[in-house]
Length: 420
Image 1 (cartoon, rainbow, N blue to C red):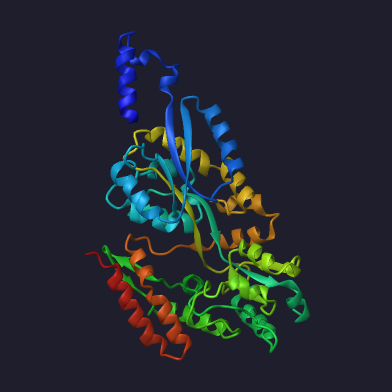
Image 2 (tube, helix red, strand yellow):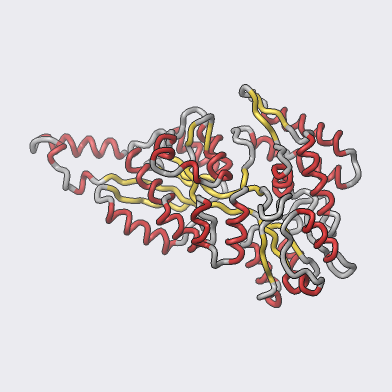
């Protein structure tokens, strides 16, 4: 539609001496359609960004359209195939989940932004948990926007009563403290048996992987010695509470379990504290946060980093203008503004000071420096659809042989990652 309108403008303008002679005309303004997800940014933030961006880019007009997460995958796929839905212009910039970039990049459907990211955007300084899944092959298609990851939410009053004066600094101290907190009347930690995102962090901390790629072929690696050590740490920690071994952190929702008042710790994003306090206002002022401990003191443990990247569809007819929008949203000025506004982690570790005043976000930012993401392959969604990691965890926690079960789960992951 935009191409047809511009063509008509140029035809009309040619009668007056040529389209290129009308640089100040309103018809020369370029509209950039931006798809952002609901709740990713406040309306006030978007209003401020739009006003300032348009004032600094006289030839660009923003059309920001808020999308729902439900069903977004197929909607994005359709937009990438057709440039938009029937009767509408397609998006020029899209916010996507960081782990979904490879799915959309496959088949040259996104603009390769490698040169811009290396030359102008400080690619080497991005959080790895956002930057790495934004790549497909050796090219950068997803540009990190914001991050969120798990921390330990704990009861400050229960720690004091147990004589624990400060948060544990490494995994050994964490196990010791959790054991002291695990009494007959309370759980030292509530950790569901199938919380595989938390397990992934422990595996990465040991130097293991969920899957690895060689010569274009992916293979599950839960049976590696490092991955088995990560599972063993999970088993020891999970036993210091009464988390169900056959369900994940949402069944039942762990916020509700924590709100009952008999749990000392959970592993969750800091924002879950709001749900806890809604269900038990008496916990106001009693909650604290610390990064998931690593093996060595002073270095937070590896964690799964969730969040969003920005991509530019290959079918856009406004590539340069769309790139300007991405540069602005992911640059230090507006990225730190978003982090403060929404309690996110900025896309670079050296911007973490912008959220240092918020205890939960500061803990999250510290952990994000060690953040990772799921394997960067379009087929990973097939693994999660029938997740063999969850079944593997339950079997180990109920006494099955870890090595045998890990090998079986690794084989299932390999099968799911195989291309047809």
